[in-house]
Image 1: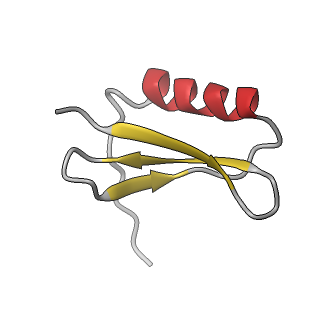
Image 2 (image 1 turned 90 degrees about the horizontal axis):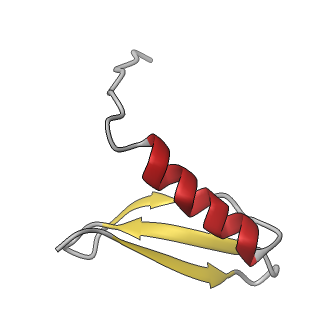
Length: 60
């Protein structure tokens, strides 16, 4: 089973989403969006821009 996006409004009225792995674990959380349409664009952006994303390790 593929991951799932969960979409909701927070207490302040902003739209947010989580990306959950097939095991139910949250693997990404969005910023707040002022509209549902903007949040959906954020989901579309994750879908389009991350399928082949590389990993960069940084030292702190």
